[in-house]
Amino acid sequence: MRVVIVTESFPPDVNGVAHCAFQTARHLADHGHTPVVVAPATADDAPDIQAPCPVVRVPSLPLPGYPQVRVALPSRRLAATLAEHRADVVHLAGPFVLGVRGMAAAARLGLPAVAVYQTDLAGYARTYLGAGGATAWRRLRSVHTAADLTLAPSSAALRDLEAHGVPRVKLWPRGVDTARFRPGLRDEALRRALAPNGELLVGYVGRLAPEKQVELLAGVCDLPGVRVVVVGDGPSRPGLEDALPGAVFLGRRTGDDLARLFASLDVFAHTGPFETFCQTVQEAMAGGVPVVAPAAGGPLDLVAHGRTGLLVPPGDAAAVRDAVRTLAADPGLRAAYGAAGRATVEGRTWAAVGDQLIGHYADVLAGRRTAVAA
Image (cartoon, rainbow, N blue to C red; front, side, top):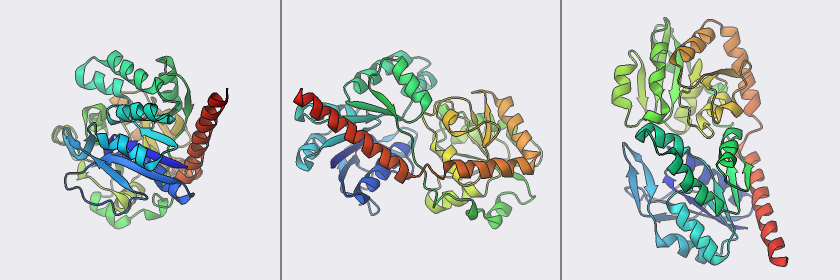
């Protein structure tokens, strides 16, 4: 099977859409298929040393406030790649700008398109503009209705898509690298450096931007014997450094370094209510860390309340503080939740979800053949 995977953003070590696209390409290549990734060019246009397949770069711009992430601009290279690669399927990761061009090009060439919904653009519009949610959904509905199949990463996302009139939606979650993210990486020297007085380490990992609502951790910073660790970067960092007194800001971390940080936490706390999946929750669980997360979006599928972590009302700083306080007071509960979380994600590897995706491709291709025969 020849597949062109189009990602709106890049690079994969700091962007979830691109990370998922590259993991998909790797699984396809490992199973004898022939993928090509179309992705935004980086500022230095450095070669993709770890890319699992050829990567076609298109013009891009840095994401405002977060220049490490590049977002794609419309490009004729996309249509040319579809034709040159003789694609059987076009995989559109988070289509909104470049993906719309990909959808149109696929239609002109008579190719089936699978669109992967990954970003709650309506939630972002409400956060940044105070309005615009309806407009964002009109755009999303238009894009995804044109696809042969839309894949939603969580049950909540699937319900949202169907409620807004998007047809032909199926569930396709995200995988996690259980070999990289594992409890055995817990590092006591790192813990002593971050918490020299033996404090409980409560971590957040992700982009530092308004929609993530990291300021909800302010009450956690006030808990005695607790040290908040913030991993990531973004436009909200200066304000968060003021809002979270005593917190340690480590900036962007990736790869094995990030996995070591996850495993060295005592509690992982996610605060953003607009996650269609929430990969960092899954990575924390793989590291054997109990999770506190909002009862909204992707975390509803990931966190078993009272078994692998605690779900709290979205936007409720007091509930976040109280959940952390509950876990801080009970080492046995933390250990039980962490072990249960690790056991939960052991079957959620990228290989497992990659097999599911190939099945979705096969269904789409079979549907096209049936339609032609009819």
